[in-house]
Amino acid sequence: MRVLGVDPGLTRCGLGVVDSVAGRRVALVAVGVARSSVDDDIAVRLCRIGAEVELWLDTHRPDAVAVERVFAQHNVRTVMGTAQVSGVVMAAAASRGIPVALHTPSEVKASVTGNGRAPKAQVQQMVAKILGLPEVPTPADAADALALAICHLWRPVTAGHAGAPFGTGATARPADGAVARARRRSSATAAQTAWAQAEAAARRTKA
Image 1 (spheres, rainbow, N blue to C red):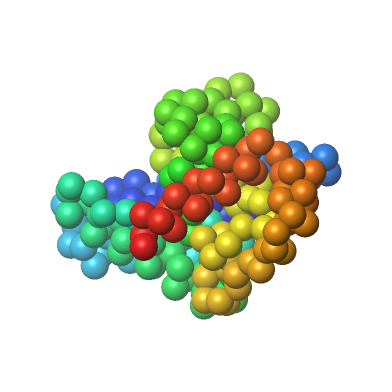
Image 2: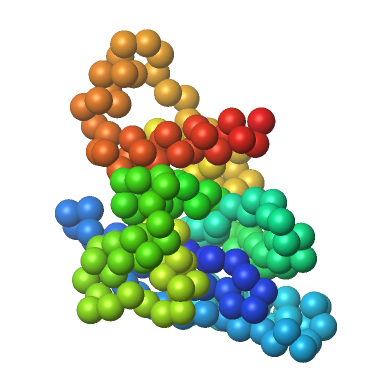
């Protein structure tokens, strides 16, 4: 499976493509950032980011796109730009029939490090380790995009709507009672358990 991870941003939009390989390993395909100038009109900036994203979609042909879920921040202007870029990315993927999944920062941290509250530096270091890179990809937006792609590959198979393809309405239907608990204990890794906890916390926050 090939995944394009996108860390949405108006000035720098992180892009990272990874492939899943045998033995639950991940291979780097490409990493970079799409940029726009703060001096340009918002429409021009979104157009430039969108054109770069479309180029990556057509060049690397991912099976899925993983985008960071946008949460409200104190800086409304920043979160608005991030949300607008996310919309551009999702529309570009949807027009090509590529499913999109949204993952929260906590889910990404839990999937990559096993700790949903891990500092960003630890996540970036783990990205380099997982991909066998001599150093952390720069800028940070690029490393964050790779973390999103890895998160999507390593998400628990029983994950609910937060990891489901955008627009499909797909949700998990976990088994009930002791059978489900036994299944989770026998098959879930520590990172998957942390991921599931982070996803549950995100649902509670949204509610």
